[in-house]
Amino acid sequence: MPHLLYRLLVPVLWLAWLVYWRISAADVKPTERRESPGSRAIHVVPLLLAGVLLGVPPLPNGGWLFERFIPRSAVGFWIGVLLTAAGLGFSSWARTHLGRNWSGTVTVKHDHELIQSGPYRLVRHPIYSGILLAIIGTALVRGQWRGLVALAIVMAALWRKLRLEERWMSERFGEQYLRYRARTAAVIPFLL
Image 1 (cartoon, rainbow, N blue to C red):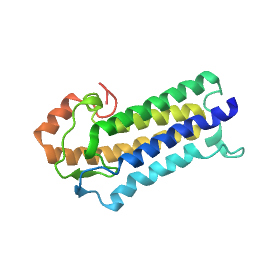
Image 2 (tube, helix red, strand yellow):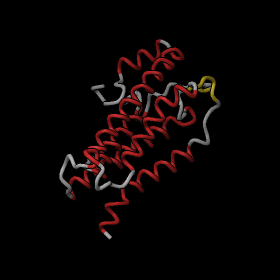
Image 3 (cartoon, helix red, strand yellow):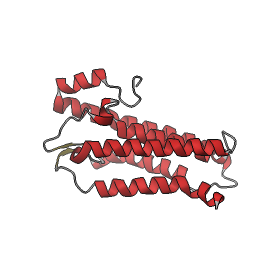
Image 4 (cartoon, one colour):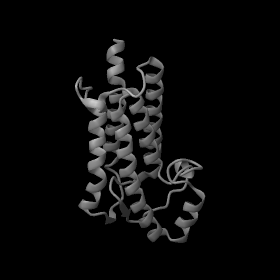
């Protein structure tokens, strides 16, 4: 049983998060402006690649990507699980708090609101913060270089998407967004 727990706990956390994400996506405001399919692909394709890197079973002859960067241990596993759960929980809190303004693509909604409360008091992009924390946790659980490569890919994809969102929010909310941006970090509270 413990072996099964070690194998399935993190994938079950991610699956539960994906189910919540899918269900909550049904009740959103109509879209006024949406990024192009090409623009969306630029950040979605790398995210899918990172998901494959983290999700495939270890390959015995998979090369350096499947070599361990940290030794296997119960402590490392549970720290990774806690980080994964905390990240998924934080991103879910942000998604819930964003409410009907949410979209998986870069959009401006009809009657779009600038949310600055809840997790948005801490960072401007708490969904990304949570996802990155969950990827760090999953990379620790895996303990293989592929986890760190997936983290780098996700960071690059989300940073690109974040910059586009920042531009659109600045255009939509003007000075109000600039003040919010000046006092609130983008992804890591008090740092970045």
